[in-house]
Amino acid sequence: MATPAFDSSVLTRRGVLAAAASTLLLTACGQPGQRPDDRAVSSAAPGGQELVVGASLELTGKGAALGVLQQRALEITAESLNVSGFPVGNLRRTVRLEIRDNGSDPRLAARQATELTRRNGVHALVGGTLAETSMAIAGAAQELQVPFLSLGTGDGIVLPLAQRTYIYKLTPDAGDVARRMVQLIESQQVRRVALLAAAGLHGDSGVRAVRAALRAVGIELTRTTRLSATGRGFAVAAERAVASEPDGVIVWATAPDSGTAARELRRAGYRGPLFFDAGAVADDTLARPNAAAVEGAYAVHPACLAGSTLTTTTTAEMARRDFTFRYLQRYGSFTGFAPYASDALQLLTSAARMATSLDRGRLRAYLQTQVTEGIAGGYAFAPIRHGGMEPDSLGVYVVNRGSWTPWS
Image (cartoon, rainbow, N blue to C red):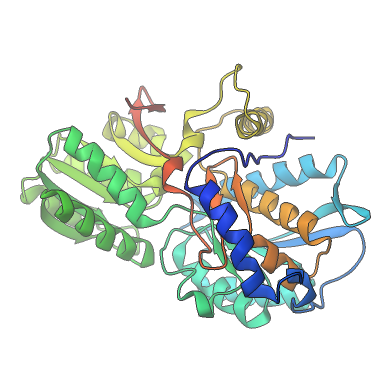
């Protein structure tokens, strides 16, 4: 069985929020001395020995480069948990996954969320690596009052909180990524930056965050160009960015668009540094067609990209090493993508242990007390904060000979 991927001893903002969460939970869930599950909404989810988790993932279509990796993470973690099960009250439970391919279609993702909840009786939902599919699932999950842990990259997924009480997000907030990226850009003495941003909600978040971060340090944004939602016609966007004569170019998009944009920028004659957000870190970005274009590119990404050494000793580091070993055993290579789905499953099992129940309302109440160090990074949920990953979990990496390596 894999070592649980949680270490609450890290003294950062997560430690402060842990104490705050304990206090706020009393206000959010009842009178002093009343457990949160005493007032939780009762669910129609099935009884028995299993925690049933429904996953709507992009296994085909535009989001498949990330969705398939999250499916693998879910399955590896579920198998590890099921070796001996996990305690919930006086029973030991196992995990059962109900995985669906949403084809990167938001309407299908919403329909799957409804069907998984009503027909399959899942206790919680996970998925949506695209912001659009996550938003669609979030709407259905909130209406049905089933906890949903989003793997999507978009700052509006959990907001406004009053209308997203059952929704949690694991990915980093765009503002945190942009601020770390701009610190890197400043250190490279880059003073003029062009931005290529994806179409849709992920790109929208990136544009707002990058503009604010650059403005705060006085770096000029020479041009903002949006990439086509179809994945085609990137050459025109690249040429416009290069025509603004930047010293550096930010590509704020998810794979496979990240690698394609890098190729088109090089074809347009750009030879300066490239800066990716975390969505670029997937097998596709380092694939042979992109290799020359992305060599030397930077990415801001959760710390799991650095891997684990044989001498790691903390609980989170050992769990990260164990996950990487299991992934390598099964798939032969591990490029360091952030296994948010693995953390989602661990967060759910931890909430079930604390709630001593698989009731959906109780799971929701105890999810918002989770202050943990996972495989991908750290999380500090509270009744007033449902995401995303903690800023101190982010690191900077550079493509060196076809692999991501820590930058210093």
